[in-house]
Image (cartoon, rainbow, N blue to C red; front, side, top):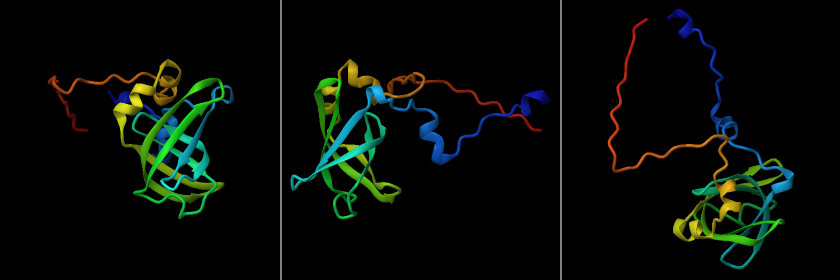
Length: 150
């Protein structure tokens, strides 16, 4: 029992948590992202993260270009694929970062987004190193917690 308590588990800091569980993009399969504002301005960025819920990317823009609450159109594409994924998104956060401005987006029309994701793009929108299993919301799961006092 004592050995069990002494197991050294790898700790993942909050800042590194998302990166620790995700596959990084490779040069051979890199995606590009463009954010188009309501006024029609287009900003080219580099991905930081991507999922079916949203994305984060770094842009060479000033703070007035994209502010939290703004609505933009995100255009996601690959040099190896003619089809593009185009989705409406809301700017959730926008902050200065080394090398540009880091912006976080939440997709606002998930049904329209999912219709565009084929088998090629699916691996980018679900970039976990290992599969996650979803639990149906209409099923009950019995959980038993055991607590030991040391």
